[in-house]
Structures are given as C-alpha cells and as structure tokens.
Length: 480
Image (cartoon, helix red, strand yellow):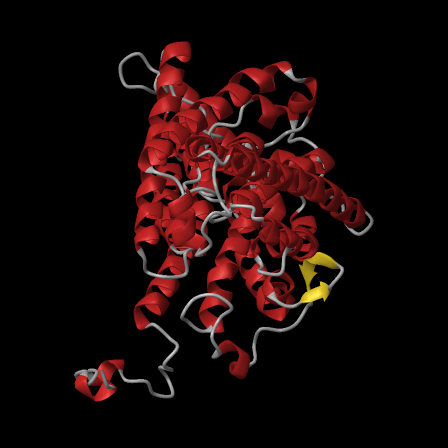
C-alpha cells in the first residue's frame, strides 16, 4: 500500500525545525513534567520536611543545606557531571566513569537523547533532579552540626567523584553493571543506597550533634514536616513514572506500584508502632512512607502488583526492626549520629528493594522496560519457568551491585571528608552548635520562644508561669 493512501497528518504533528520527526511531543512533555515533579520533591519538598523535622534552632540551616545543594548540583551537572554520568567512557578498559564535558552547547542539547524520543536538553534536566535529590538526602544524616562551609565543598566533590561513577556504572549504556544486567529501575542503587551509605559515612567523619541535641531533638513543626512528606510522596509519581523515558503502559504500572507499596509500608510501620509502643506515631508513619518509596524504586515497573504489596510489607518491617531494635543494640550504630536515620530509610530500604527486585522481576515486564527478553528474570520466575540459573544470576548481579555501591561510597565519601578537614572544619564549634541558625547564618526561623518544649497545664495545655519564663529567657538571648 502506498503512503499516499494514508490521510495527511494534522498540521500540529508535522515535523518542523522546532519539532523534528524523531521527537514524540507526548514523551517530551511527560519527561519534562516528571522531572519537575522530582524537582518539587527537593524544592520545596525536602526543604520544608527538613525545616519542620528538626529542632527550631536548626530549621534555617537544615532547609538551606537542601537549597544550596540543589543549586550547586545544577551548575556542576551542566558543567561536567552529566557527561561524566552518561557520556563516553573515560577509559575503555575501565567502564565505570564518563569523560567530563559541558552540556551547554545548543547543537548538543537539541539532538536526540541516548534513550527516548526527546532532546538531550530534556534528558539533562531529568537526570539533574535525580542527582540533586541524592545530595539532599545525604544532608539528612548531617543536620544539626555540619559546618556550612564544609557542606559547600562536599556537594560538588561528592557529585563529581561518587555520584557520577555510580550513575555511569549502573545507568549508562556503557557502564559495566548496566551491561551485566543489573536492574535499577529508578535509583534504588544509584540514589538511595548511595545516599544512605554516604550519609552514614559522612556522619561518622563529621561527628555527632551536641549532647543536648542528641538527647532531645523535637520537630519544630510536624504539620510542615507532613507537607514536605506529602510532596515527597506525590513527587514519586515522576520519580518512578519517568524512567521508562516514554509514555507507556510500563510507566503507568510503575506509578501504581509505587503508591501501592508506599501505602502498604506506611500501614505496616504504623501497626508495628501500635503493637510495640501503644501509640500511632506520625513521625513513624512518615518513616514507613519513605522506606516504601525507596524499596519499590529499583523494581517499580518490573514487578506485579502482588509483589508491590509484599515489598511494602518488607519495607515497613525490616527497616523498622533495624532502626528500633538493631540500632539500639549496636555500639557502632549508636556512635554514629545519623540525624534523619538515612542508613535505615535509604540504605537498608534501598538494598532490600534491590534484592527483592532480583526475586520478583517479571520477564515480560522487564521486556517492556528494556526491550530485551529473557535476560532479566527474577529468581521466583526462574523457578516457575524452569530457568533457575537465570534467576540466580539476576539475584547475584543485584547483590554485586549492592556490594559495589557500598564500597564505592564508603571509600570516596571518607576520602572527601578527610580532604575537606584540611581546608575547613567539618563540624561547627560547640559554641555555635549551642546557638544554631543565628550563629551559622545570622537568621532564625520563628520569632517565638523555646526549642519545641511542650507547654503543660491540666486544663488549657500550657503553664502560664513556665511560658512567661521561656519568653523572658528568649528575650535575654535575643538581646545578647
């Protein structure tokens, strides 16, 4: 049949210089939308989550660490980071790092991306927001004491010497773990396992908060924290839904699985809190929400709905156990002051998701995501289909990926922290930590008294005499 028998295309679908024939407008529009949803997870999502979850005197510093990281990563990303993560291999014999180059030339940015029917400009923006949120998650382990000048150095150094290596190895078509067949749908390894391990390692080198803050660190605004958590949850629609690089049935499945796993994880964590502590904790519910989001990330579009439920049950219980039981019995874990518990919510949950992906990855769903049939088979389906060796191979590759990411981030993060120590102190002085935001930035979040203390009164919920004393003390501090 000749092409002349087909009806002509509508004028808005005809190729033109601004809309080349290789570009799919729907895919491009969704990719930009998904990227913006992920960006909103950081700005303002994690900014207000951190700002509300910490003690009042650290609200500005915590929020500012996130804002600074977002801006700094973007400049580094277009300057050299994107090509180091997704460009040509730096050394052919060692396929784990890309060659540094700028991503600012219009000829390059308007060409078709390495994957997907949209331009490089869209891909650079999409991958930037993932790199940015990784650094912001690391900040969660360091809140309440890291020298801001040290943080300003840490962000570009870690992005350059750790994130780009992990991203290239696992996500770049030239990366060695990508070629081996590691399944990391949307960043369980590259983002969450990396940020959890790097955050915990950096917390070791930076040192703990003040004794007073470690003993009592109440959130200054739980409702604000919940607002940030809500943005984080809903933004994950773009986080996992954008990674097929196409508007597809697989993207739809990834979105649904993400929310199903997250809801299950939140409810599981809540039930465990009720059983063992007799009270439903909203902070615990947020932790369960986060572990569910993290756990499903490496598997979102390659597992069935029942597997998403199981993953939610595991992500709501295993990180709960490591945080509530193992952490309290381990001298090492007690020594390291991980402010937002990123080791449990991101490293443990990310590794768990990677392992469960190796068990539950469905061959057909993997084909829809990778267009390669038979290479990716979870162990469960390996038994079911009579290809057990393929299933064990997949699980082995997932475990190799976990080992690689952990070693990479412990070594590189440690080297970066040691280097920074020769330039500026990693930790604020004890005197500055006693004051907080005012000492670090000359600003404070609220013009109210206290550090989140509860005001008690049998009838009205507050003690007038105590509150008056608090106001008087706050006034003295302000005058000083």
